Length: 92
Image (cartoon, rainbow, N blue to C red; front, top):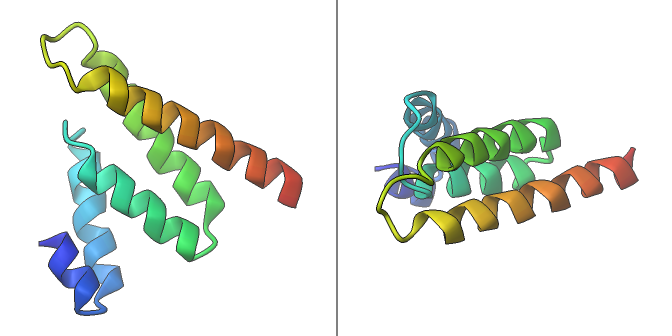
C-alpha cells in the first residue's frame, strides 16, 4: 500500500503508513528502508537516523530467531546508520 501511495505522489500518506508499521516494530525491512529513503530525499537527516536506529533495534532483537535473513538486514541498517551519522556530522 505504501509503495502505491508513493507512486501516486501521496508521500505524506505513505510516510504515515510506514511510521505506523515501524511503531509496531514490524519485522520486515521494507517500511524502514522506504521511510529512511523518503526522509533522506526530504533532507530530514534526524528523522532518517531515528528510523535507522529503530530498524537496528528491531533486527537486533530478532538475531536469536531461526530466520536466516536477519543478519544481512541488520548489517545493512547498521552500515546505513553509520553513513548517515557521518553525513550529518560533515554537514554540521
